[in-house]
Length: 149
Length: 185
Image (cartoon, rainbow over all chains, first blue to last red; front, top):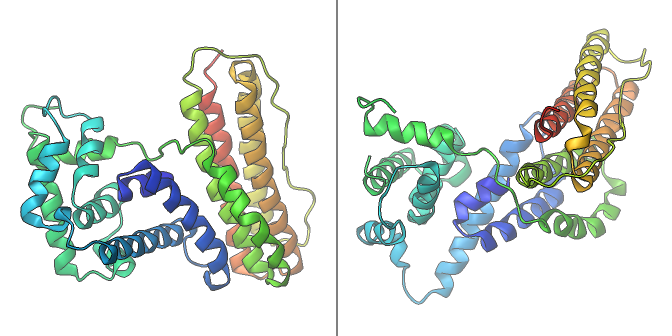
């Protein structure tokens, strides 16, 4: 759970709050849990929703749209954080994932890291399939570029 | 990496190498427990299925603690310790469906084998590691006992059967992770 929250949030403090929030929400939502469902998937969905709500709250508070949400700015954000593209290691990949814009990061983490299908992610996030595919493509392009693959 | 590996394949390789678990901050699980404690008192009116799912939730959360220990276990200094058995070998449960009794015997064998392995390596585990493993296993045992008890009252309930199996598998997973924390002596 913490690994997913950390990769979704790309921030240890937020990941901690998100993990805690997820378990509290899950506890409160247990009466709605269908026992035939997979508990981990259910928890992941709660975490994704909590993250989405958090993002919406941040956007409302922000006077303008975050730079990281702007696809044109995204590459700058990624390139700025992942310094000196040395050897492509898993640590570099973690950092590069953390520097992705939130939307494409979420798509990559859920699909490529956690192994959810497009349909499952669409259910979790409410994203259209086309949007999800575009985000995944974008995430992979940015990661390959920043890791010099 | 092969020099012929494509960037796409290399990205997939790197992604597959990412750790499935990341050690959470040490105070995270106590904080979650503190948050849930006042709420748990309100579960008295929940039906058994929800309470069992709650137990599963606690087991799911406790697995993060094992992850934390995986990081600590790499520290060179180790102290001798004793792992007390919290074995949850099934008692005679004639009211359970036959296939579950067979499955339980298989789980019991796996749990016994893992306990033996863990016992052989116990001296390499730090006391804090032992304490956390025991705490996690107690949660798993509690979840197993509760699922089993409910299933004895309602043997035809497939949800309860699945939950019991799931709880056994979680316990085995916890034990397996614990043995992996302890290097071979």
